[in-house]
Image 1 (cartoon, rainbow, N blue to C red):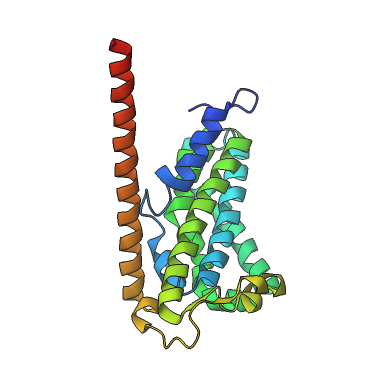
Image 2: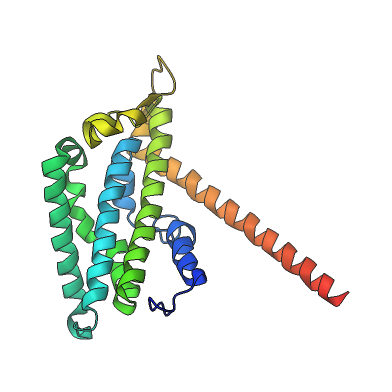
Length: 236
């Protein structure tokens, strides 16, 4: 897919959005980044913080790799891409430690481990290194948002079932401006520990993946019915 800035049409940009948010979603479509996904999504707040950090790296890495793609030879492209990603992750790690210290302590080692996220290197290799700067950055944004949505969804499901709250401690971890997100959905709830533990993450993710497959199946059936109806109308 060629996406030169002066010739890109709405269909091409829409395809990038659809791939990142749904069809080729990092988790739901590619089954990547499952380690941080299951490890940090005990609450929706942690999922949001991790998702935004990863999105920032995806956007910046897509932009920079597309910018230098014509100067990097095929023989050294992977080490160069990893180096660029590592520098960006280090900057994000230092920035979060300085301005979002509580969230940084909560996420811990998983922030530096963004470097090893296969989704970031995969997008650098399959998209950013083959397309201009703007589409590459936009692809990073959509992939990052799709990943963040799954992180927040999984974290929200586990947090609601596990403790009856939503975005707990958002003001402490993300800043006072996020205090409005904090909600107690089930007052005096005693909690369900399994949902917060790792097995609960696997179970919740399984239901989310099953839901996506069901939706995809229904959409495919609806598309086939529309095509069949259109074909019958054309013959008539």
